[in-house]
Image (cartoon, rainbow, N blue to C red; front, top):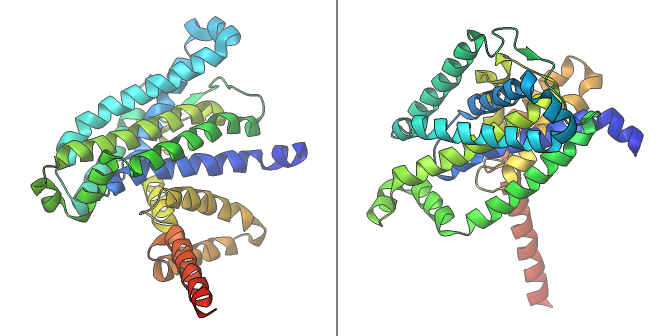
Length: 303
């Protein structure tokens, strides 16, 4: 078991990490908002942790109280990401559809260019030697894993709460929701902030995991990848981002023996899922479950 974790630990942690990043897109989509800003907040959170981690003043404290310093980095990243999300979200979320997607992509690119030209972020080279929380890569499952469990529980409770019902009402018909007394701007900003805080915290956890951080962590390509996780997994269920993020991040590694052919197969899987599973993997599993229940129910009634 130890050998398996040593050989595949990085992939396992990456699968959980990508599932969390997919969930950061899931919350705005609950309100029907196509936001692609998560890579920007992910990069921001990583920079916060990398900058704090490389400050000489905290070195003695980190050696003796690392279990305190690292959670403080995550908290700082979440607060800064949430504050920036409010500033960006209030004007940007007045847009809809493709216009909102373009605005959030512009935000990601602006943040990337700013980080490329700041001395504190290491410029184009980035920040190296970020202090690590664990010696082995697979041990980071003890930080990403509990966060994933917490977010799944949060999503479950949110889905059944008044706020979650407001999110869904706005997604289905914003004008009708507004007529029923729901403030669309307020709830859309709230969903945007929840996703931003999650992405920022994941970024702060990822900087020690990767031991380095640079502007390549938050790009347009990452936005498309996270969106693919949610759409292929299923955007109408909290299990969709989990399934999509884990499966699509593991697929290239599973197909690695096929060398260059794996890219073709990976693309084929995405096209197949988009055409034949429009509700995503979670939706297809739900339809299969309903079909099985219906068949078994018919069988019981006939008996």
